[in-house]
Length: 264
Length: 301
Ligand SMILES: Nc1ncnc2c1ncn2[C@@H]1O[C@H](COP(=O)(O)OP(=O)(O)O)[C@@H](O)[C@H]1O
Ligand SMILES: [Mg+2]
Image (tube, rainbow over all chains, first blue to last red; front, side, top):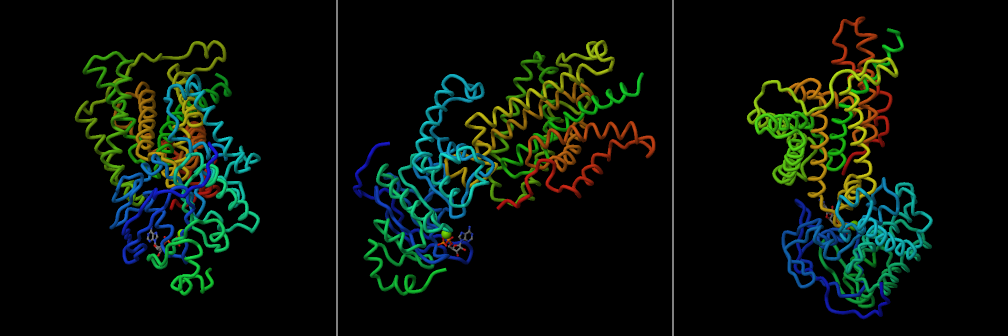
């Protein structure tokens, strides 16, 4: 993992005219925006605005009825989770989705799944190429564990961890994929101030040190204004605004619809 | 013969029957964990695998070892076909519809097995040792069938291999991941379809082993698929998602059934082994609904 000086580049992913409905509910209407290389993009909006649905479209959990997704120059009607993962999109979930029965270490190791090659037979014998490979991947995982300061909970089954640490393990699992694009769904929800500060620092570090492009959903406006390069505002499935934090803060539509009213 | 010797013989014989129940239940648990599907066809898969094996040996004159390898191949192809033509289209259906699909599958497998290999009772002889174990007679003065000892050893070895497979391999880790959380598994690039083919293949191979053991003892016939009926109480006892539960549950039912048959059977007028397992499971259900090792039952979302 190399040191990276931050330089926001060309669009890495573009969504164009995405519409997604569930029966009567229109979760997303005609949404277009782009995520640029090496930036931190925040997606904000009140509950039910369609933020999570947007991430689900990007990593292929939801298939929109309309629109296209362009990633790495390839235009698609819909993403598929497997392809998204293979092509370097990792994510976390609003309601932590860890493998509850497994240890922290094993959870993070699943993030290496796509990068492991050695066959079955050697793995069962735990010998030869498989052993070398496992050791190499373990080393990578240990780096991530150090980076996120979770050494002490390596062996603990994640179901037993407090919520804040679970969120951190989930981030670790996503980082283990060495993604180009990282999608974070409310990474700080339910955290206290100190935990939020830690998480903000980790997100900034990931972005700066590894050059990872990040799209995150967050409710805490202070955090959003602090860490994001650009902000997309959604409301009732529509895009209200798209710009730098300052531009968005000054946008009257946004103030009326969202910032003016206390949320939650 | 001493009472205690008799008790031991009964218990060992129960344990060996229990191993069969454990294996069938193990097949159920694997599929249930990985895909949330209650596979009604698990029993018929044992029959189908055994029929295929006998057919390949009789009709094509293959030697036993080659026929076993070929049957493993058939079970893997079957797993692939099931994923390709059934599961893939049903992922988002409710559990009850998936369950009904496996009932359909059971009939199809039974029909195909019949059509290809005929419905008469067949002897299965892959050269497993028969008769009493002299070694057990000489050393412990108890009567045990050699075949039962072999079955116990083979089952234990298979469980050990599976345990290593689950704990130590990348695919095992992916399997556990899928069992825990489908969405999260997808998000790290685990392919559910590949995992399902693997799980159904493993369940097919477990079914083959069960079919071989049971078929060597009692011949290959339709009743083989009925051991699946004993798997249900085993699952209630052991929990639907617990592999150790399936194994221990099977042993408890096997032994409990034999004891009941010998010591209580005459009091209630025989045939107790047909229903005892269910009564035991029901009583258990009242005390511990999540099973022996089960996590609390939580609705999948
Ligand atoms: N799988 C689904 N089925 C039905 N409706 C859904 C589904 N996912 C999201 N929705 C609906 O889409 C709208 C947007 O939801 P969501 O994307 O979760 O909003 P947010 O993350 O901004 O709070 C809501 O009205 C929600 O009920
Ligand atoms: Mg949401």
